[in-house]
Amino acid sequence: MALAVGIVGLPNVGKSTLFNALSNAGAQSANYPFCTIEPNVGMVAVPDPRLEALAKVTNPQKILPTTVEFVDIAGLVKGASQGEGLGNQFLSHIRSVDAIVHVVRCFEDDNIVHVSGKVDPLGDVEVINTELILRDMQSVESRLQKARKNSKSGDKVEKQAVVTCERVLGELESGVSIRAMELSEADLEILTPLALLTSKPVLYAANVAEDGLADGLEGEYVKPLVAHAAAEGSEVVVISAAIEAEIAGLSPEERDEFLEGIGADEPGLARLIRKAYALLHLITYFTAGPKEVRAWTITEGSLAPQAAGKIHSDFERGFIRAEVMGWSEFVEHGSEAAVRAKGLLRVEGKEYVVHDGDVIHFRFNV
Image 1 (cartoon, rainbow, N blue to C red):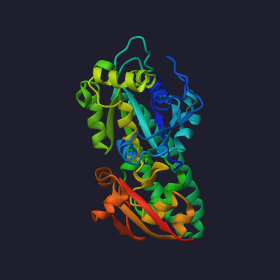
Image 2 (image 1 turned 90 degrees about the horizontal axis):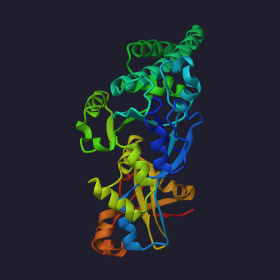
Image 3 (image 1 turned 30 degrees about the vertical axis):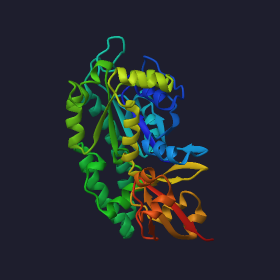
Image 4 (image 1 turned 90 degrees about the vertical axis):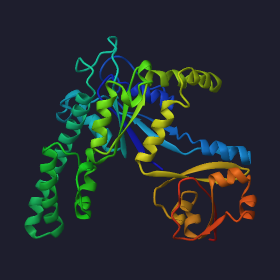
């Protein structure tokens, strides 16, 4: 699925360092503003222990995880919506992604310049949010002017657009993001084509120093960020971009030893990737056999034929049934035949809503 998560934040908060660790793509990272101008893009595998567990049972020739696209977008500054710091260009990059990971600096370091001269997580968040809201106001105002002109002919859609845009513009002026507004289906029909920046779901990544990891969500700088995120229905992942960059360069054995040394079960990036994946309302189902064990990405709530279509359009067009078992059942009993013998394999039809973790064998006829 071509779904993308944009990494945003002020300059020098650790965005590119985090992106490098995520993708090992070698994105340039340096201690000065606007180091990143063109967005770097990397396809990142979604860590999933279930995939490894299934592979141990089937011993396949290939193991294929699902992926999420991450886009490293240049640092925004105050005035970006008016073109400051190449802001117009950077904001257009955000418009093309489906969700946002907002990296917020939550550490002190005199050797790394902060664009505002001090570490202030909530102040940083306000700068970014304000610029996104200001850009959305420009988009809505432009649509409103068009609607007012076109509604004079009696066009019902344009009349609705006037009502919607006037109300939404008022809320934006009050500092309310699109995702926090109560919108009707009619409102969404008007607003969705505008690809408004503050309509996108947000995950905050609190970038802490190594000694701040132990404090987690209770850290001095992190705690107020958690409260802010909770108030708008978002979440916070605590991560140290510097440590993640160091881990990314280690062998699997060295990585495990390093993680044990800092008292962690897995890299922080694994949690970040899974949270970003969930932010897009995505779930995973599996196919498992001797040739390959593979994770497939679908939108939460997808029906079985739609899920089958992710493999091949013929699977959806000629869908007959889905033979479904839970991944844990497959691992516990060791094979599809054993699960079937236990009476745990379910035969589902076209109306079956696929669940996260399902192992599915599709039957179809074209």
